[in-house]
Every structure is written in structure tokens, then in C-alpha cells.
Length: 132
Image (cartoon, rainbow, N blue to C red; front, top):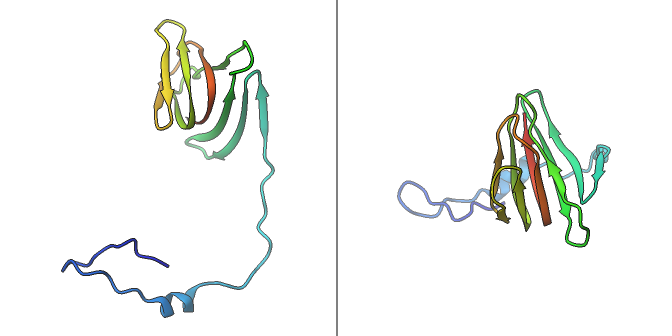
């Protein structure tokens, strides 16, 4: 229980109420948490895992590793939806069909417009793919 150094309106550190926090904390162990089944898909140079899905969007983790193979991973947006690729670890190069190569690094974001051509990916990276 920590307040991350926040201060009150007078600039003084906020008072922590540890005893009150412990009174309301659930420290008993209930049922064991249910781990959802992981669904992994494998394509050449890429493994993907569904992390979250709702009626508005879905998020997948993509593990790209094409450093040792001659193939590249391929990503494309659907006809009616864009996709966002957020690099959370590693680096690589994106090869759009009609543009120059785009290097990407941790923290970079690639936007694929709806109905865009296939983008080939090369490198060793972990990406979050968001689509709707």
C-alpha cells in the first residue's frame, strides 16, 4: 500500500491509512483462480495469443522471430477495420507492399489502415495487435 509520493493540496505528503486498508483487504485465500485456456496460433516466424476480446475490439500478443529463417511474418488489416501494432519488446523492420521499409523498436506503434495491403515483418519482437 503506497501512494507513489503524491502530495495533498498544500504540497505535503498524503497520510497513509495502513490500518484502514488492512481492515478492508481480503487476505483469505478463496478459490484458486481459473486460468483461461491459452489459444496460440502459429504461422511461419510468428506465434500469436489472444489476450482480450469484447464486442468493440480484440488484443493479441504476437511474438515475431524471423532472425534465423528466410520467411517473414505477415499482417494485414481487414476490409472494415484498422489494426494497431505496438512493439512492447525487441525490434524489427516492417515491409509495406507499396512503401519503404520501416524499422520499429520497443515503444513504436504501427498503424495499418482498413483494407490495406499485407505488411511483412522481420526481426525479433513482441507486439500487441489491436483490431476492431
